[in-house]
Length: 170
Image 1: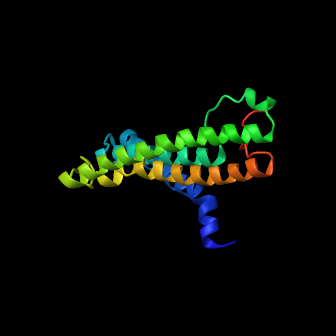
Image 2: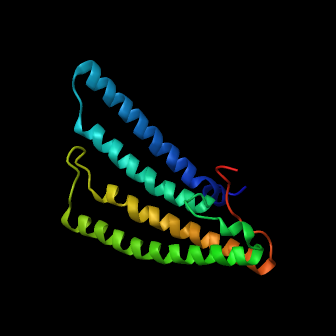
Image 3: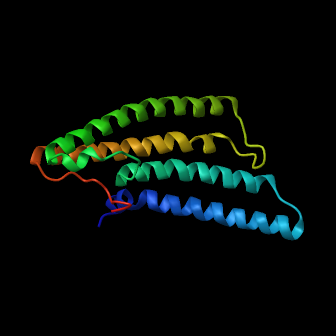
């Protein structure tokens, strides 16, 4: 398996692991510091907050990849492969338009923060790094939506069952 294919397959999973471990470890350290030493730091709170924000946006992209986002699929059980693929394509196109618009506006926020040089209160790091979570998340979503559209157009063309993702409950 090539490196690019491996990154494409597991990128979100590894990023989620990194941010989740960072969040849990920092939170555990801060709880121990607060309970044992009666002292807590503002930087620990910021690391947890921004790790959670990155978790949410990268997790949203992972949900798009696995078709794990919330949807009402009652009608999907009664449709054949081609109408089902067409409906998924329509949904992905709508989501793609929203993601492109959101990417543009979220990048605008990052640009303004970079222009004025805002920094976080506790870590004293440029806010650009934290605000980038939103455009990075939307960029990953767009990439995954394009992959999904390619897969669904192939299913529509061939009349094969469309990828519906893993079921949470059966």
